[in-house]
Length: 400
Image (cartoon, rainbow, N blue to C red; front, side, top):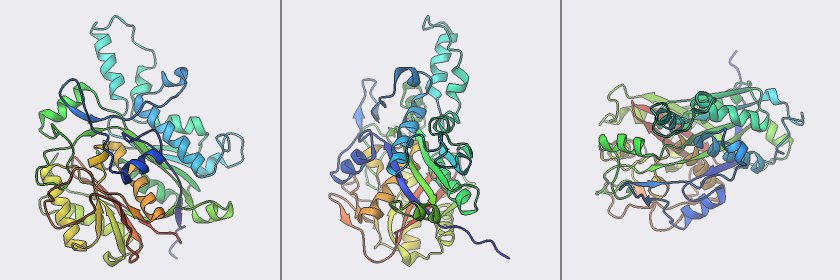
């Protein structure tokens, strides 16, 4: 007899982004068309996020990516109506809560600093906790320690699809009864000269700014920050009278198996992930009211995504592309963009795309000002595609 899957809802949002230290600043900045991209003294452009105001003793034990993640997790946890010690003190069962977080490079800046120390370029001793501070799983571990999560603390590394895949995995853990509550999303902090130079060497970076779907687009802008959702079984949320943003309806994965940095030109990998997300949500293309595009502003990437979206949905569904405003947060991108998509459904308002003034293609791209969410359809998709052909799509549904 097939097992009945539990319904899962979003009850909390947290974010630290180039538009500000919390979700409110992110949403306000997107709606007003703000841009977090800044010129750097070394000639690159990037989208830095504000440093979280953590106590010095705590901050020194966390890499920058983990600092963003812990800060966003605290906000999301409080936004869901939970107290900071509810798991520690047994108000909630800590064994029924989990953390699933996506990242790409974790605390790479810790290793880069350690390398300079080892080779005698700083005069400082090597910190004894360099290794645990640098590992990609540090962020999920520190969220678990901070909030008292004992069920599981998981880390997903699948290039720029990491944050979206992390949310999908957390969704499944609740649906199948392993946990009741999950803190899920993505985080990244890799704006430094070495990483910037490495992306520039492969001609992936823009020298001026992020222009999603624009004819003049020439690469992505590196951003940083974190975006996390609180996922909860519907029964658990209703029992405590929680405010519900939307339903986490389904998700889909695919692999291009094509190239280490370029998507399949025919977009079959992207199309497969989109289709799987709809099937998992029990939806069809006609149910889709909005799409939050991956749209990194690379020439090949935006072209492939455009092809897939037009083939499946046609030119009428409104699309937005947040990376024009916040840059590309790599492992944090899917988490932040899932937060944006949840807020879009909750408020019934689609933020405009920053940076596109001469659109390449016929997508119904929202630009210049916010647009009301269409009354038709109840599904919004949040798309993430990464180097190596990792494709992940999250399907959120209006609630109720």
